[in-house]
Image 1: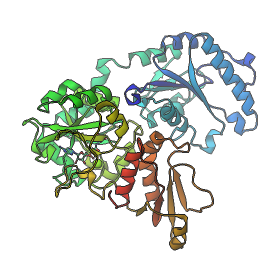
Image 2: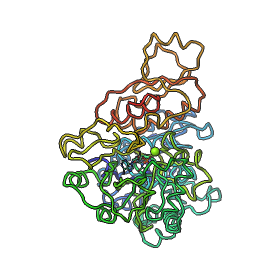
Image 3: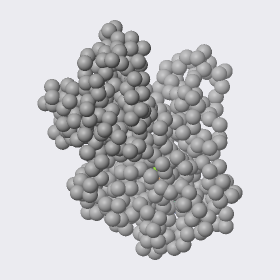
Length: 503
Ligand code: TXA
Ligand code: MG
């Protein structure tokens, strides 16, 4: 399934990186490849998806036309194709750099768009270019930037922050890409530092494919207690344990029912959490004294590397204050928990954007405790019917199922129609639309979750969009319901809780 097969990519600048920078060129005959461009990219053997991301301010300046730029881009893609090098997409920014646009800086829109459309793992991706903004934009999305001293590279070398990888030419840059996994780098790198903190009993915020987690060594009750303090989370709310390999399950659970095994084979690593009978060694503070434990293998490579290097299972709830929306960027974590955590690993925006699906295996038939990143339909296609009605009990077994949860400050209204709008007169209203908003209505702010009505895209945008509306200080957020199929079920679940209505 798609979540398990996210691929790394390389974003290549065009002028001064792939081809000589000869100013505002219009004709294929003006294109001069550096001599190592093609042979270097061939060495990647298709292991990375390749994109060209280029600034063509000549258009903004009125010197070039779109068709001039496209003619050159098509020519380059064609030559590459003839040499067995596939370019997945070419993005060009027509704006002048000093005008500041969102194509490339500060949040590189093109990279985020590619990540979504091509299902990329940005934490394993690179941007290569001869301008400091190329490495900067990589950093902003959790990818790695490699700065080239070809093209304008020499000229801006002094502007580079320290610690940036610098290569003399494309061949050296590709060497760096291919060597990136050397074990010595891992230990000294930032993930290695985070792992040391976990080993010493500290707490680290880290990206997963669903939302950011706040992690501690699951077998260190004192470290886990700090998570509850920092989040202001009640102790009756148990945590999910994150492991890196299925074999680690044995340290945590007593047995694995056959249906659970099937789901593990199919969906791990990925956004599915299983609630199973716990081993006695798992501290009570992790499970809130329950005889069961929630566990999953996340698919984000930073999360996996952190768990591997820490050498222990990591207990982690979402890295937000209790009751508030889960964070889907490192910045969200900084805003809420900032100094209280020992380190925040930045892996860019989370791909899935809603929390994992939680399934319990306590009864004969598995029960859905929380809809999430793996849809009910996908689960049922593997193990058959699943109970979906919540068990009625005083103490909720999954407080993530508390009616009011994942809530912003601003009230969210989910059930409304056009005619209610009159009664909101004089109020500042934000709209949270699933697809393109109905244009006849006038709102102070509108957020569109997915223009093309794609659930996956909508889920990935959901929490950040609600946060933005919350920050706009509107009096009310009107949310548009989405169809309750596939990931739409998780989206509606979070919207209901955010609207204080529960289910
Ligand atoms: O996607 C996710 O699941 C994220 C990332 C960080 O992995 N984590 C997450 O954790 O959403 P948290 O703590 O915010 O939500 C975990 C939910 C809670 O509602 C908790 O009650 C439930 O899992 N849970 C944990 N252990 C349980 C257990 N033994 N039985 C039933 N529910 C449990
Ligand atoms: Mg949470």
